[in-house]
Length: 181
Ligand code: 5GP
Image 1: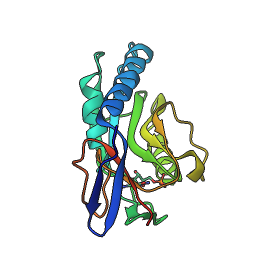
Image 2: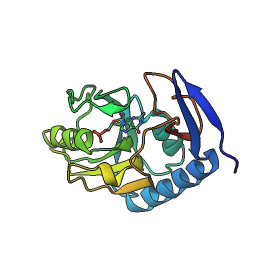
Image 3: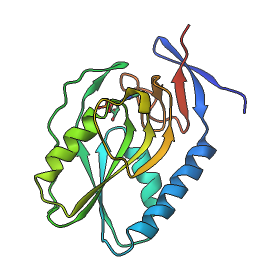
């Protein structure tokens, strides 16, 4: 497939993962979850804002009894992680003794997910499973055990499919990587 180039604010990006590949991967993850979690009555926790598209596409393919809710935790500005992770907000369900499936857009350093898991543990769930559309293994700084991963990608800034650059480009149906010029 020919690479598509776009400009978002002052930066140039080109396609790195097509819509078709994303769709196939979301279907694969959903199949695994439908099989693994069939008797577990899981509650999915989508992490806003970035995971909204992944969570929506995935959730449509889940065929077992389940619930979903969305949490907010902003930690990122521009193209570099700030390291300042905020509080998890939006949990109004009882998570005690539940199978919780966290849905993330991307795991970069792992600091965000590590913080989420620590905070979720306080609600005494039965188990916490972690799903992410994208993972940058080379950027990882925290030990996080990922249960479902869409794509492992190089340590480069990406956007599209829910991921933004200063609030823009979340609407793009494919994933784009920053072009270094
Ligand atoms: P971590 O805490 O794992 O370093 O970063 C997780 C969060 O940083 C993600 O949920 C996402 O919001 C943001 N992030 C990390 N890498 C990227 C990237 O390449 N592009 C965009 N747009 N956001 C990223």
